[in-house]
Length: 270
Image 1 (spheres, rainbow, N blue to C red):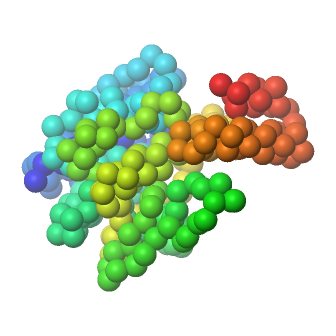
Image 2: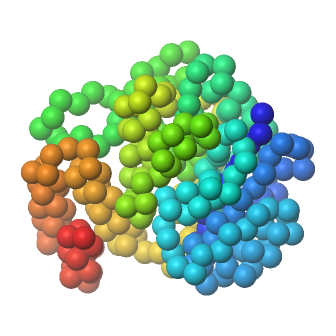
């Protein structure tokens, strides 16, 4: 079983060394690491760190976003399984091998670990995909032994069979950040694929440490943009416009968006 680990970096050189050392790739002969830098200010440093560790490094002049960056890495990958993992996630290659072994044993095409904070506190990393509140909704997951089958799981660390990923056409590049993994999981589920969490594999991450210079306000706006694109793609245009109206309402009345309202509005209308 060959595995390609793909990580997309944006001003992440400050955590890249720890990420690579924790992987312990020297213990796994059939693993490869592909680092895709997305227009970082520290791209040269990240490239040097990656090359010193034997990784393949792809540099982009512009910030192309998570989904597109991941597609670029996947296009250069040779593994039977693709692991997309953020560089702020603490995970070993042994854990990734265990994760993929569980997926293969249970006929799962996309699998993720349990996710915890750096102090070990568990976080919810699975659930349902976005559904307008006026439509019927369920919990979005079922539990079966050591697996949690879910409509979607966290994209911070997930493994997917290369065949399934390429059959789906990879991530939809229309999503710059947020909802791209949810869109992928929905398309996988629509084609009778299965997405799951493996209870016994637990990784840790502080969350949000994989890029410098990104504000909480910017993240909030991009989350709205991704949410709106998702609704437009998977539901009716009327529901898409309702999503825009709802997000514009939040921008108009929530103080955290006050200094970014014009930019926020233009993002949502793209």
